[in-house]
Length: 73
Image (cartoon, rainbow, N blue to C red; front, top):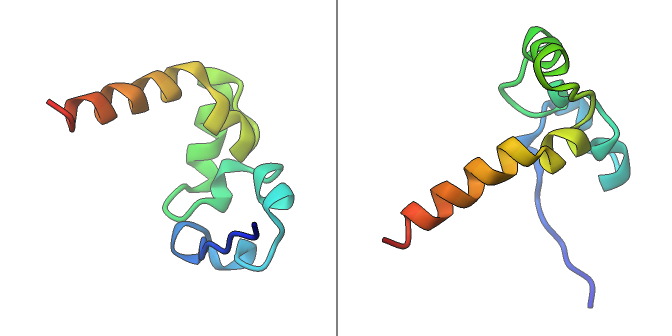
């Protein structure tokens, strides 16, 4: 089954027409609201170089789980 999702609200304009793989391989600065300076700090603090790294990071994933749980209480 094909799935279509509009990601444009979460991405900088330059990344809106890229494939999912290209977005995942891009700097976190591809995300709307994340600056190049922010991306540099993510790299320095957590070794996060790509959107894929950010999404797979155990600390961010755990924080997301905690937020999801808090919404169920």
